[in-house]
Amino acid sequence: MGSPLDSAVGIALQAAKGTAITMSSSFQYLLFERGTISPAEIQRAYGRLAGSLRSLPRGSIKTGVYSGGDIDFVGAPECVGWYLLGLMGEAASASENGTLYDHVFSFASDEFSLPYFTIRKRTAGLWHEQFQDVRIASFTVSAPATDMVRFNVGMVGINPQKVANSDWAPASYLDDGVPFLTCTATLTSPAYGTFKATNITLVQTGAIALDEEWIVGSYYPDDLTLGGRAFLIDCILHATDEIFGKMVYDPDYVATTATWTPEILSDGAFALQLDTQEDEPQSLAVAFDTANNNIDWIMQPVVIDGRVNKQLMRVIGTVKQSAGTQVAWTLTNDRSTDYA
Image (cartoon, rainbow, N blue to C red; front, side, top):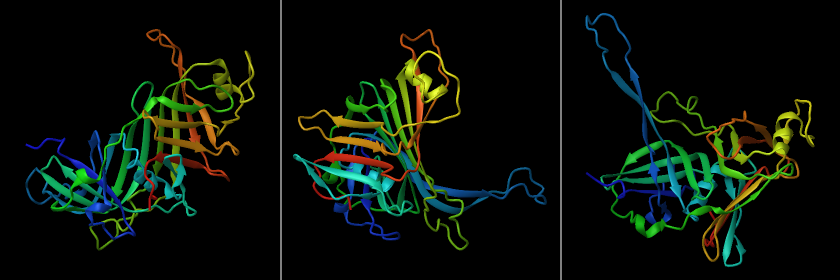
């Protein structure tokens, strides 16, 4: 049996849909903890049919296939840029930042436009697959206190194939960079109160539903259309009266007493920068539209638990559309060339 450590996942940007990448030097690989991207088959059962005089079902038939799954990883301060490009749709030209380079990822002018990728996967040294016309469907950043930052990327694609790997050489194109850490992070709190977070989770998703993509005459989805986006900020915080009062009762709350109002607390000043532990730290930062306050904040019911030593509370920010730069991810690393 093969070892899971003898596995590899690589990504390469396609010029267009239907144009799979075949040159091995175009791919970049990363170290990962877990990956599930695989063919996903549509199987239809015949159902219960009378007339056979038998009690078991007649069987089933395959009627379609696509590719899908996700990958969990730490580190990869260069390779993560390809997944951000797939998530956002556009990357600005690299700009020098000392000896490093800034890469800013934002929505394209057509916010529903996303690039396609080819994904290669080696499973435990046993077999090799290639997935064409893949789009990034989700991107999750998990940042618990005093720990490494972990990422989860969800993908969906059109055409899976089992292939040979005679020239893949994943070790030659591997991003084995150091992880981002939460103990070196910079958290910018919203204007209404200081966030002392024990855990932060950022979840950005794209609605890529296959239901309407199946067409008569094909085993494969016709395309992978982005129908919309969502971005949630989930924080576990040290509880404070100010944050509680402003989120639950009244955004203008000052102290002690308040009458509940239906007004939503909107504040876009939240920002998070995650750094590596190096002499010249590489970083990943996310920021929102501060000028137009494009995050709506709510508080989950506060749980009083006598088994813990510190009162905590959970707040969730929902990013909404605005006239300015709604979401911007900035990746600072040693890559001098563009993500294009």
